[in-house]
Image 1 (cartoon, rainbow, N blue to C red):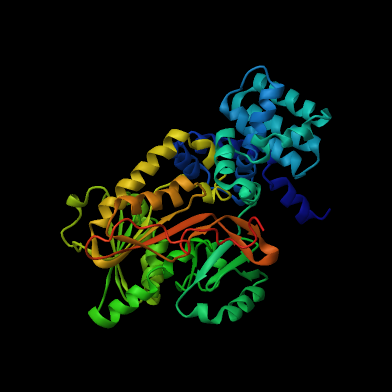
Image 2: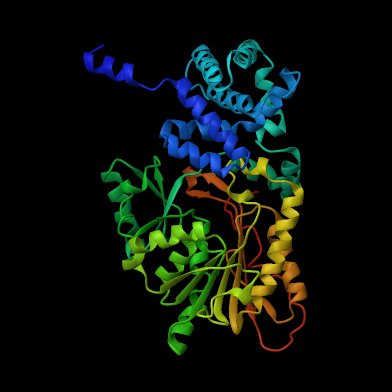
Length: 465
């Protein structure tokens, strides 16, 4: 080994340190402790190595619950559960030799909780290495699909024979996907050549969607600094063209149309709408911190905008307190509603573990209230789009039909509909799970409408076929 190699090796951070850091971050994530997570980030900015361990551990949280129930007399404190999830993930995915990982995990436990609990970690990991039953743990649905049993059963009830495909897709690491704008979308093949010139591989996932492998920081994404490329999943990109026909007519007859992006933060859909249409886009959100991300991003994308974005801090359910500068009614309204986020759990594996059936029922009720409040703010002849990043029918098809049942002046319009999660990069289908519905406000009472079957259906290629 040369002098330079020996020096680099001696300065390398031990895996045990990264494991301990990752375990603390998992604890903060699972506990919804944003303050602790921010403090950890300030103390030690998240490195790619730690980020990878966090993701691996969260992806194997279900495995840790299954093994602890089988191998331990009682559940350990959450720091130990997090560390074991990381260690078992690393062993399963063969990051290093098993006994190297065992040694590093024990050292991490000593840093986290002291000598005695480290002995517990040592015993469980040694037993796992020797245990012929260890591989059978993956047959347990909780470990296999990395979710509580009620979550798995809810997906199975909703999707029947398709459920296994949905659950499997949610176990695959999501790609880095960008949406091209500012003219780049018309030269998508040239963009692939730019990626190749940087040693990156690009795959077209949609009219303006390109996945990039391997995932890189945004400063390495061609066109990002110029606002011509924005990070956005292929399914989420469908929101940008929901109002194409309506806004084209509005621009021709009335000048600049008005669009409300309700629940807008962090701003990806508002930016996409303003890049596509010469409209006044009002980006409303109750979180000033998350809305700040949109404001910070505006200078980057400003040269690519056809329309104008107005960030507004406010609660969708309290329109009486909206700023007076906002229009009373809008030509188009996009409600990217709060939801379970079950459709993006491949990006955030902790989601299933942080939700309860009661919370999903409560958020569905919030969706209902938002739809009714926003409908009153839509002009006659205008269109409202309802979007959720969920795979649950309760937050999609069912919610859309209930809205139509109680709203006599609403008509369903064709749109993207149901997009089930896909993870088939070989065939060019790789997307999160989303639901889209679109409604037109008609004049007078037209009776009860039904959800248009061109709007609410499964449009994910290959699912269930």
